[in-house]
Amino acid sequence: MIKVGIVGGTGYTGVELLRLLAQHPEVEVEAITSRSEAGVRVCDLYPNLRGHYDTLAFSEPDADRLGACDAVFFATPHGVAHALAGELLERGTRVIDLSADFRLRDAAEWAEWYGQPHGAPALLDEAVYGLPEVNRDRIRQARLIAVPGCYPTAVQLGLLPLLEAGLIDAGHIIADCKSGVTGAGRGAKVPSLMAEASESMKAYGAAGHRHLPEIRQGLGDAAGAPVGLTFVPHLTPMIRGIHATLYGRLVGEPGDLQALFEQRFAEEPFVDVTPAGSHPETRSVKGANLCRIAVHRPGNGDTVVVLAVIDNLVKGASGQAIQNLNLMFGFAENAGLEAPALMP
Ligand SMILES: NC(=O)C1=CN([C@@H]2O[C@H](COP(=O)(O)OP(=O)(O)OC[C@H]3O[C@@H](n4cnc5c(N)ncnc54)[C@H](OP(=O)(O)O)[C@@H]3O)[C@@H](O)[C@H]2O)C=CC1
Ligand SMILES: CC(=O)N[C@@H](CCC(=O)OP(=O)(O)O)C(=O)O
Image (cartoon, rainbow, N blue to C red; front, side, top):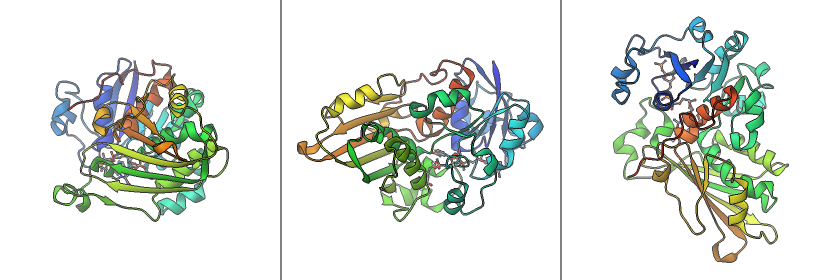
């Protein structure tokens, strides 16, 4: 058994880590932090966890307690992991950061998009981008993981086969994405109110969202050259889920696209290429650490359309974070992540 800590345990990704880790055979949650709920028992705030963590209580973030853990997850707003990660690594604790603090390789680009100076540029060289479908071997050796964002996970997985094979024009890619409201976190915000978000749908960030540089970085690696990407996120009246509709212009004759996708992900435990002609639904991945992908070529023309769905809190955050932990510690990659999706 290893001991883990969670910084930011009251938020949606924090409690999702707890839900998934309750089924993990190799992990014990040693510490969970919250400044606002310190002293409160986890099962009193989250009744779904009654019977699982009955003695575990939130505590103030404390470097000594966290530093006694084998690994610490940061499920916190941007900037928090910058301040604590270096000290934890020095104590021998591995760090898995669910925020964007270590996702961009360039500290100046991070500062530009996140509106504050990068707080730990010296750690960027060793941070590994935690997308196992691309970086599995590096993740196994890593001490510091930057878990990909939710939109970036769906968009990159959906486009990797096409870009790696050089089958689409990398200069003109479109990612039209929809998210459920838990993507905005648990903090009270007017756009997340039921009366604002239900029975309606809106785009946001069309002129430039902070996930744009992260997605461009990953797709550029896959293509071997900078990519041109239009990314437009939308807020939809779901609790969980990301739906990405991805458009690329084919260059030349692509062959069998269904076979290409099936072969690319044949060995991937958490990517499901759905049958030709299918349209995966967000509810088919709800609660599961899974990306389901369908590929279409309308009218046999020169546009390829990829549909990718994930649960933003699982493959888009906490499940993917645990997948990284499993690789780092040599556990079965699916430990704690075996539950199928919740339907209906
Ligand atoms: N929601 C999603 O779908 C996804 C979220 N992420 C990222 O994961 C991170 C967490 O997201 P989410 O769970 O939605 O966020 P929430 O807003 O729901 O929760 C944030 C948590 O961080 C704690 N916190 C806030 N400020 C600090 C601080 N300065 N020091 C220590 N703890 C702090 C809060 O508790 P308290 O204030 O009591 O200490 C709370 O527990 C974010 O970076 C988010 O962008 C990534 C992928 C998907
Ligand atoms: C619906 C909603 O507001 N979504 C969030 C992104 C979700 C997310 O988790 O972003 P990170 O992974 O980078 O933290 C947003 O658009 O900012």
